Image: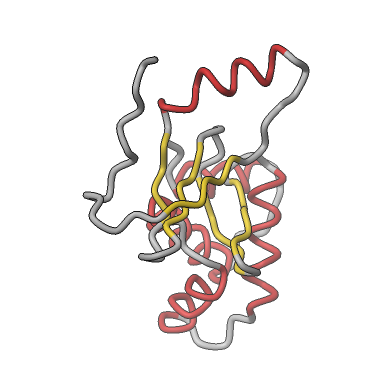
Length: 142
């Protein structure tokens, strides 16, 4: 996993300006990427620490980091969320609002798709998760 410090160093190396706003946005993204933070929640957290940062500034920084391969963005019900850049499935729990990563469980599916010339960008699985322990369900080998 890339850290905020590594991303900021790479941005500096590539000639991007490191304003206090951009530095805070990057720090908040990487502190919350595991939670799949939404654009609006990220904007709110940033404004608590540095009032006056526009949602447009946050969005532009997210898009830049996605273009550079540091994060991936995905949308659920019109809300933009931040994710790790490697291919994996996100299980979207419709009943609890959770978003759970299913990293290793999806490897076989990704390999089958890629063998057909299909390169997955994002895999979202909608589910009802009530009663789960916050973990992806066990998959049977059948």
